Length: 132
Image (cartoon, rainbow, N blue to C red):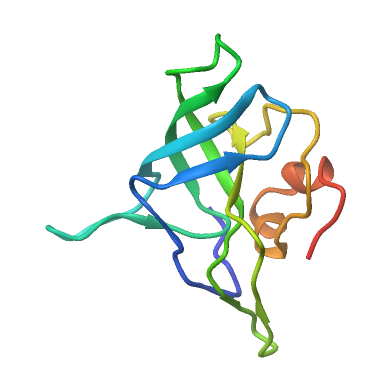
């Protein structure tokens, strides 16, 4: 996985409920793990923009509910510090479902995507309306 140039503070922890902003059929997911995260005993795993989370679908199409899926975090409320000194804050936490290769499952994303996601997953950025 390609490293990020920005300093991304991890804003989502295990147990977070996040809105899925693509047209894959899932509406609300529940984070149960973070792919590639190494933890310490007694400390919760956390994820930020550009990380892949393992989640359970809570609301959505009946065939999607109770499925374990992988999703990439495209927006977070926690501040993101960029190398030029700016800080970016989004209104909500949002994810987009991806498969094992990192390709998006849906065909379009509602809302903008953070620039940090574009560095790692260019196919996700291709189906989004804008990049911030």
